[in-house]
Image 1 (spheres, rainbow, N blue to C red):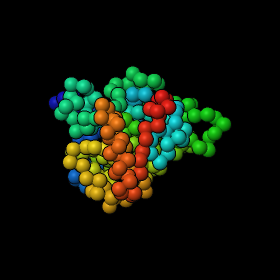
Image 2 (image 1 turned 45 degrees about the horizontal axis):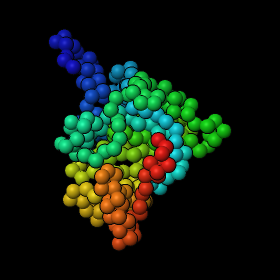
Image 3 (image 1 turned 180 degrees about the horizontal axis):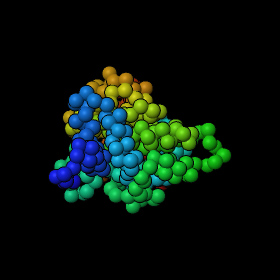
Image 4 (image 1 turned 30 degrees about the horizontal axis):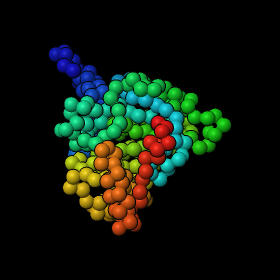
Length: 264
């Protein structure tokens, strides 16, 4: 967005922050991280400069069972953010993407209950409305994508905690995690730089080009999972995943049970 010639410093900062927040979140995170700054504190400052009008772009929101990893079978509200920093989501760009095997539609805001939300409270209220009222103590939300850490911020985390939710994220691990997230699942992709080295579970899709599982084994995660890549070689990849776990018991097999059950 071009700056007006007569704009003062404060207005210029607003223009810059709006551009960062709405279109360049990943570049912003990398820049401030390299500078040794707190990306989330700066992003919250940006929200205040804009009058707390940060927009969350959501592809879809739905209530289902977690299908993968350590919490497989657990009821959860899934909130899928639009956008990713490893692929545009367009098939025409898949061949040049860092992550070429993604099986998720995260483009736009046209999915179930998708849209743009101007406040964290508005988004939190919608998520809360999907949870059965009689089971309030076990509220569980999974922020996924795309890449949720392009948009998930302290304000939304606080809003979700305020309505009683435990917060989980599914991230590619290339962006720092804000404080307050209760469950961190990292799924690293070859060709990207992993900056999240600590969490609750790491889930590696196999096989990937030049992949070395040993490189992850020294990281500070509670659970180590491998998951067979879907697609035309799914049967072969599942055999590989099973043999990987049997030969190295540090790793456990993660199944996409939601696909087997034909649920979202």
